[in-house]
Length: 463
Image (cartoon, rainbow, N blue to C red):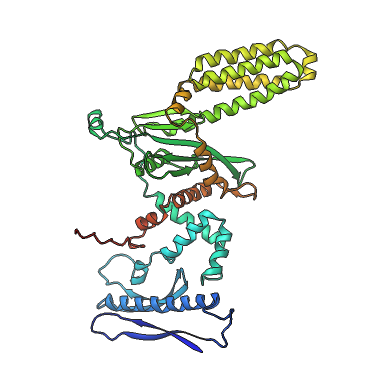
């Protein structure tokens, strides 16, 4: 049994359609292995259709837009890298009139195709590369599409960087403040039902050039209604970090009079990022990071109780009291209690016998001093967490921890010894967050006019 596929090109009204044989294949006896198209045949079929279709499109375009009265210099081969294989076409070149300035010759197709990779292919390459490693993306594309044999992970990485860098140019400039409205205009706006909740945290990835790691900021914004959005950037590379966060909030419907609650771990760098984003913003120290430090002290207290039962019991009671005061927003009283912890340990500072029995005494003293400094520096951002929980409001950034894992850990995993440059990590994070937010297709529509146009839904007729 033989099958033949023909392509009919209807160029314009009044002209006869062009009929061309595209693909022919045969089948012998029917079996489970021979039923339907094979993957290799489907690749060859798609490549043949793509070659024929692009050839007809370019021939028709050149016929309709052929320069009048200009001398033709010749033609050269132009290779288009498409989703269904590399297509080579002849690109004619013409001499410009002597009166025109600029190069002596020009090619109509060169202006039509400023880059030789189609947006459809770039979209799939960059979307997959944001989810899985570059080389795995190249391998998967080779498995399912008729791409050229030269496609590698490095090529896909370069394509992703070029696409994201072009999109970065479209991001507006940093301004302060972002909501340029007066108090009277803010009061005239409708009152939002609930505040926007934004959490920021940092994750670390291995550095390519140096030993050690560098920080990547990741965050998530949760509106009162609608889905959450994540964002991220490398602060040493990003020239517009505050604008980036603001654009995420504005995409979720942020108004000039809307309250925004920023949860951070107390780092001054994270707090400075959120300055002037909203006149109604509130900065809250994340309860998770407070209790995490208390948990470490409680582990030390268990060891201290092994050598001094009474002192260890008093130490644990004071830790419990500190946690209670912090939970109820009383940072001043908690600071006094932390100083009491230091007094408890001061009794054993010069006791050599105690130092031999409990070797963690000096590290514990240092941890208490660090904890006192941490609470003191962030006392203005410690709120009554018990009251917030009573009213169903957030007290912790557990949702941000999941965002850090989603944005960084699942793609830039240190377990696989992945190493990154700051710029490469920043550009990949921009693509990954937009893919996770389901905005990647809209970014391509903005960058490439005509890319996957939205179909206009017909209006429902009234009864």
